[in-house]
Length: 445
Image (cartoon, rainbow, N blue to C red; front, side, top):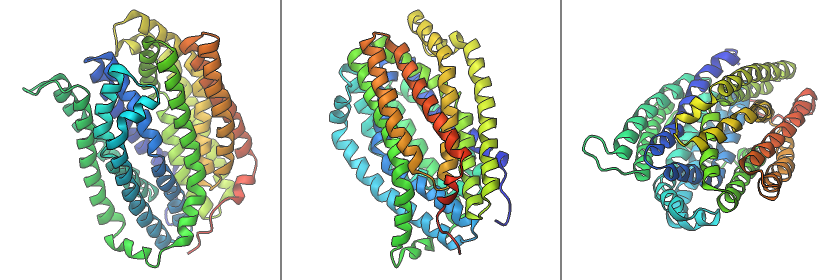
């Protein structure tokens, strides 16, 4: 490593970028809440569908992030470039295929997870546009991963700022019908989101091939690097399975809400989740920075230092998230009031925000320590814990508490928190031990 990476210098641009990226979805829901509460909920439902069908991007980009950081930590720039070429190529191919599927089968897919009536109509409109161009997000994910893992986290942050400005302006114009435009509702949000992605991808691609790599990196794929593909699958499939199971569990839970609970519960869940995104962005950011740092350290065989840095990242994330969650509790009614004036929804959501601090305690642990384990190449253990916990505690627990015991949305949050806390304890035990130190990929130059 020519220049030692620092956790803070990696984290703050990722934090700003992550906050702004989450703000994209927040603004979509906020603007639509002024148009129609069900329209706002439909976008949340459609985005859950997108999350589960784009799991293949997690395989490629997630594994690419680990391998690029470990290759660079070992001083093997050619190996990092080869992984970058593989990531871009595979994400484009699978992105186009998934886009086609979402254009053709968006309504059946949404109906399958329980969407009906106006929610189905709104979600289908959104999914046909945003899902139909999901290859843009696939490429954006690959390019961002490459740039970040070279330590240039500020670049993607600046681009995300621009994407937010474009998305926000177009949202307001298209959804609310300003400047002589017709009120496009959900379709306006979809067009705004897609256009902002086009601009962001164009700028980041220019940066990638001007400052980090050359277009000639694709020549490294001849002869086809089978060993590198195996490494991607070895790391990517377990990580993707964890993400897949999480998103699938959320779809099952959404289906439970749509079929068994009230529209009030669904709307409240949508608004609370959009608020709490800003509670855990610190953990997401520190976790992503920690993964890059741990990958470089493991690649350079600095294992004891990696262990200390992982716990430092976790401690910082936990302190910050607990403080932010406590502030959220103090201003819970005002936060819910951003979205709606319905007193029932505000009261229900405010109560959930109090309960949510326990969920954030576990979620912070998972977001940071799982990222550190992934950076070290230890991906099977978190996935095994996820399979057990998400389906026995989160999904089954949600059904029992919310439906069987008739606790409604309160039951959902108890199950969510129990799942996160259980897995968090298991991640602490794993990082405290040393078995993860043997999971690094051979990346010598």
